[in-house]
Length: 206
Image (cartoon, rainbow, N blue to C red; front, side, top):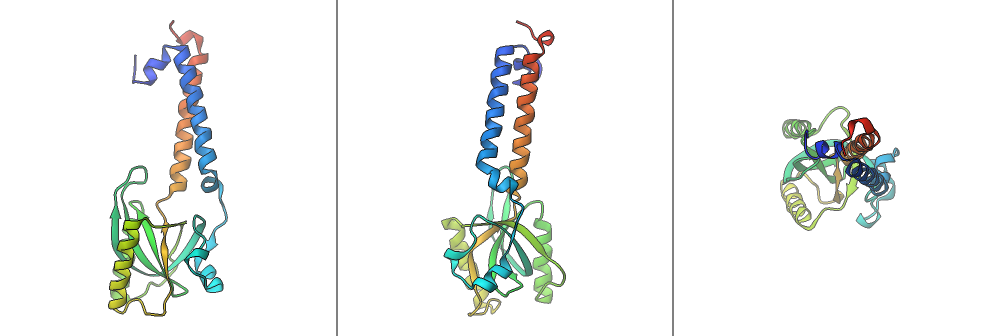
């Protein structure tokens, strides 16, 4: 019968058509729920936003796609396990404007973050262009608590001066946009295959 469940659907026009329709509907749902993330092209320069607004956390562009220009990197201060994007580490980064924000790094770019931490440790500040694009998200309670504790440590060590702005949010660079597109394409592909089997009468057995 072939690989389950596709081998099973291949020999039943009803099941193949039903599964194909379910897959197509699921793809539409994925696109409907995630279309803002999937299609958004514009990004907000967080450095420029903070410098011009000088606003509090309530005025931060939460859930918007932002660019951060990293001048120093500390951490990681938190580690999370997950599916899809895999495990993630959280770092505190200093922006060009002198403010600080948390950044979530996926396994795909964690090596680069570790190198930035090493460079920061020995040189104090990064040279060159270190830009990262992600979505500014709220931290959950546990992440926020660890973030606050780590910021206190950095302040005690003199790495964050008392008058510097700390944004209590995280730039998610775990590439959820790519994950949504891959999920959408995969579900569409499965739906088309199932509908193709349903329409291929000669290959079906009743």
